[in-house]
Length: 455
Image (cartoon, rainbow, N blue to C red; front, side):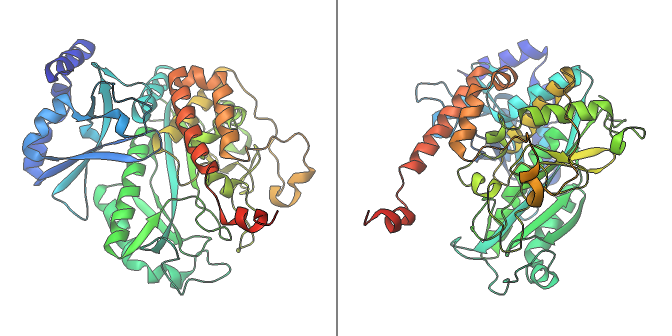
């Protein structure tokens, strides 16, 4: 497909060319001293792909997009498919704090004159538009946890970080001050409103928090945060990993999401009701009911890797707790449940892990929650129990999938998922993830050799 046909298709859809509707990236580059742009998209597996474009060429890229071959990434395409065009969203522009001559842009993928429906950012945008049409704007915040490892990824980057309960360890935090400060300074420069950073529950593990925002903005920032953390860690001779469970004996890395719905103008929090139980409205509980109803079917979108299920279903770790759920339950301000209600205006979903695709995680929350409102789903009574200690005593509680293959099969069979995300997306995602599982299953491990060599 030629550049002219891409431009024409966008004029036909929107009435005017996209470039005329958006900020002028060429002018922004000149004003801000940007010499290059990274035009980036995220594939189905959450990997960020990009092209580096000189500022002199950004006008054409803004209008027509940067060309990519879809088969070369995790998008379930073939070499026979036409070129994809990554059309940058100027509203997503972030100047690299550690390299200010480069601007980063999140992009939507187009093919044959149309957005590609099954790609993560396009899918999230469609669901957000559906939500707005129904009177709902979702806002979220994410708690990004990650490990700082040696450059080869084999050991904790700080040899002195060995406490049994290292959470909030001041000394361990300050030994990594230069890295954490550089990342936090970057967030401040970008205007995200970072407000706290801490050493987490595992040795070598950290969490950084910034202000919540509209779901698409949060997703774009989440993608960029991972890029920024990795880049700054590399500059300090370390490796930042968002692998959910890099060490069997340590707490895994989650990505807890704080969720609320607002009116379309963003003026009123529709989850807040002073008269409601724990300060939440009826819509909030119906939304929560949808999340609980579909959590197992959508689990593979929240916990997308083989390694994810070693976090969800882990025995107690060195610190004494896993801090991750394995049952579909909710409670008040209680971290042993899949959903926690920490305040009177939101809830916290604790299912997502650090490997989550930022766009698909947000899309899954929204789709499940809106279905809950539409169907007036009842989340049931909250459980005010310690699920780690007494969960086995609670009858009728649903459990999350034990393994990636189980989660894939639940998504494949889900009529809700096909209706919400599209049958083609579900089939593509399941096909790629099944191939990943098969590759894992074909791998021989030291455990097998140790236990069956003399069988």
